[in-house]
Image (cartoon, rainbow, N blue to C red; front, side, top):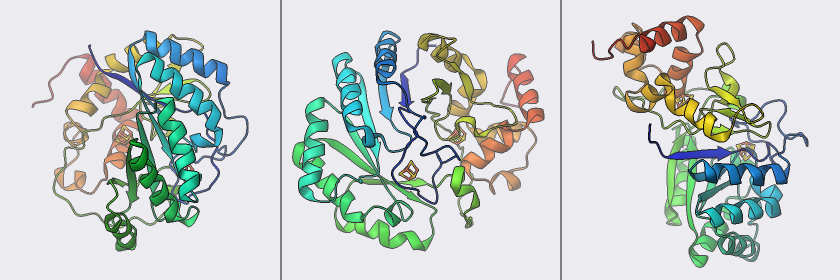
Length: 306
Ligand code: SF4
Ligand code: SF4
């Protein structure tokens, strides 16, 4: 398969705040030892370049806690012509001057894009002016950016969205995922028609050097470990990407979508519409029985168009 290779790069799980909705949160978040060795991270990027990885997103925790390390990794990406993105909560942009200082460094280093996280949960810890300062600095220095506006689609989020709109900032709504700390949050009913629920499934490399097929769910499908691809200690980066690309079920999630897969397993349409995308994914693939059924079907190459 000739696919575009891109990955999330979890240099560290550490974060300086504790959002109530954090997907990445586990008991371990914030511990000092969940961080890659910088030299190892550089070697991995060298290897990724050789394996034709074309885009790397530095995410998980708050990458810019380790500003100098991330600058060094972004510089390396730039050397190889790899598209680089940093995902940040904007804690460092308390004033326009502070924002300008960081953004100018990221720009000079060759960062391709900054993604700023914004939500009523983030903004319980980071002043929303930080996001404005960071976005304005990006505009000033010509660094591409967008704001990821995480929402549960409740009216509580309307003032937050209005703030982004009033300040003419570039933002995209992103549905809250009920993983991690968000598992305990109230779920309002979302009304929509029958969505296909295709998913891009960004793979991720964790600080422990495990690769997972989904950067949001990672190891959360504990009954099946469905998304686990392998560890860099036992496989080359190229081998891990090949495993990811050759998995028929991952391919179906990206191209056929979860709703059709759910229909194939016998789930009624009236049931399917009650699920959010990741919850449907969990129902299908965190069940050993379902997974066995689906693996047998794809292995036997039995059609999806019944
Ligand atoms: S959501 Fe992001 S900023 Fe908030 S605690 Fe989790 S990693 Fe940190
Ligand atoms: S739908 Fe599945 S693969 Fe996609 S983000 Fe959700 S859990 Fe991950």
